[in-house]
Image 1 (cartoon, rainbow, N blue to C red):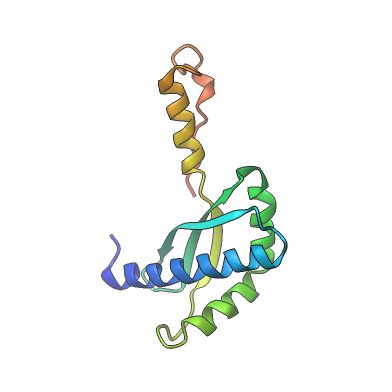
Image 2: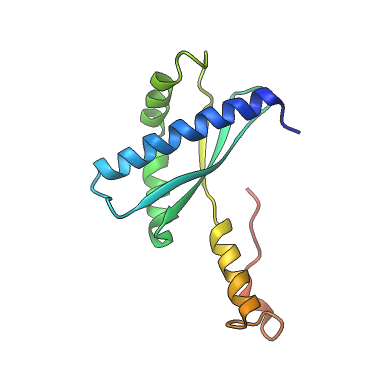
Length: 130
């Protein structure tokens, strides 16, 4: 169960991270790539923030996530500059791909009859928990 403080900090982090990542993508020449921060979960001791990111187009997701992870110290520094009046200490950032939109699209296609998982149960992948 998240406390109100965790929710507030997660909201601040989500908003600022979305802005930082989108500006970095545009500055890096990825003008046709959309990066959105879908969820941020902060631990109870506020030391770690798990950041779930969605990419469009999703094919570049793995490559972009690797780039984001390698630039984590720089992203954390930018975040600290933005939140210095709100947070004493910025949590460690852990980045993950949020595949829920792709998962929902697969379910919708299945329900519309394009791919029927009853006939072929292997069509719907097992979701991995992070």
